[in-house]
Figure 1 (cartoon, rainbow, N blue to C red):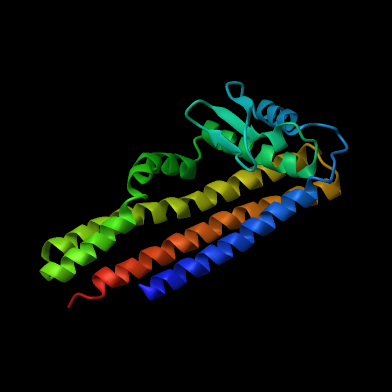
Figure 2: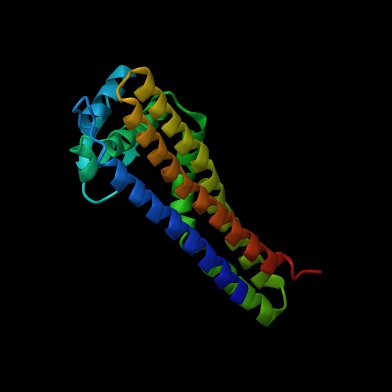
Length: 231
């Protein structure tokens, strides 16, 4: 268990460092005001219109960095700091979330795969570690048998979460690439503004990369605990 806590601590530290860096980047580029004077909401609406998407609404949502695209009700949800602001950070986030809307409209395969996993992961991710741990305890007391298969079931649940985190990577990177391509091709930003948006999105993507690596490390650790003990 000590090694597990060391792994968790290391992952948490790296995650905190990347998240903190991301916040600092967005704070820095929020001071780079757009020459075109457009707000995040206006940029989002224009990107949707330029891609022929008419059935997606752009709305404001409370909180910081709570921006997301909801495929269920077709809404681009922008945090208050993005929806109303007119800077490079707001432009990057707004265009990125619209990138997801474009993925949805074009049936981007990785987004489709991730959407299919959402119901499964939402149920299993919170309990998988406890099931694995419980299985190990049962196995230790009963000598393999039932406890082993309980632990394996937990590993399968954990595997779905890990798979989900890795499928998320191409989805997020592709949304950023679509956003940056549109911002550049439509001359929406100056060179300085574009570089700021690009840098901010790179750091945002790294948070998903860290999460995926952390999920894989946790899965491998518990798999070794369950499967490594078998003859």
